[in-house]
Image (cartoon, rainbow, N blue to C red; front, top):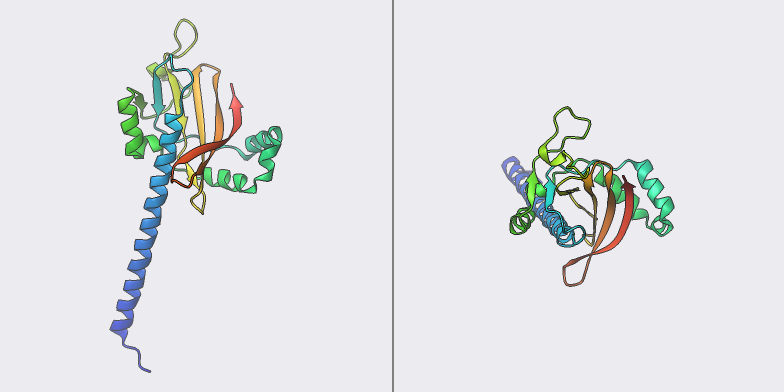
Length: 198
């Protein structure tokens, strides 16, 4: 059987384009799920409503695995979930911030008059933004929130994100959260693990 080179090249190009289209569709599904979970997290913020909210656009810092191990030791039920370690390891890969790329998050922020900051400078920096300057009570005037891009499991039914909330110098903390996708397609928080407190 003689192979027609132009036909073979055409078939190779078609297969490659089909694979690219499938990959793009999968990435779009993942990105939509990430933005849905980020919005569910933000809609669930009910504590400390006396202060206005401020969202930091930079992604959450990677969670050191030793911190995760310490948290797992304090929460034995999490040790039975081997997927959690795998997903948190995935979360250490740099991701974009949901505050930056999710239009639903920005819409929520606008509707709730939430201030968005494009960057984060630590207290040790020589230049401190106005929102990191404490008031007379040694508190910030804002309820400051940072959250990572949610990591979606391979089956699309679970999501993990890291969040931090702080209100003043050495006043705050952060958790790792697990969400599950319900049969109706909505997401619900099922587990919370404390990562640090300051």
